[in-house]
Image (tube, rainbow, N blue to C red):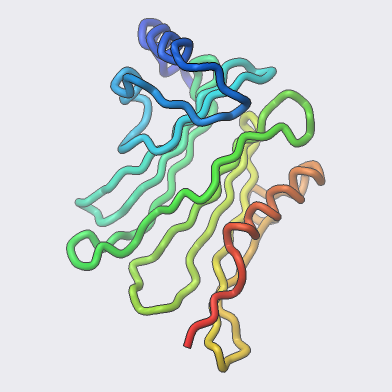
Length: 209
């Protein structure tokens, strides 16, 4: 685990905020009444916050978006805190044309909390699209699925697929599960779930004229 980031007083304040919330189900979205209390523990605008409890303890997942106007990038950050410790974090980005047409965006498609292998250690899965700055239809868009079970990371990296109506050639449509952060050693139930979730986001081949 990484170093403890939440100071004692801040952690007490955060726990008080969570205790004041209505009881929620496993991995449900939460609304934080006073986001400033934890604003130093994520960067940018907080988009998603989920909390749940499992064998490891109290889990808090934060996902935020930061607009880096200086370098022309939109950045997604993800953080998982367990009992106040930062267990993992992720960062990804895409170029954005802020000063012309505004094209380019990180789109958070799905965030799922599961316990597929019933070991009482949750899997946290984020699926997102890195939309390019291209404005003339149509190009494949990068899609990534990142799953963590505690500090074990799995990933699917690929893209949407496009083709012209009178052409058999398909551009994009990649799907790599066994490269970096491979699913090779993951249980079959986790592999099948992640593969189907990725396919849902990617969808069918986009046909354009």
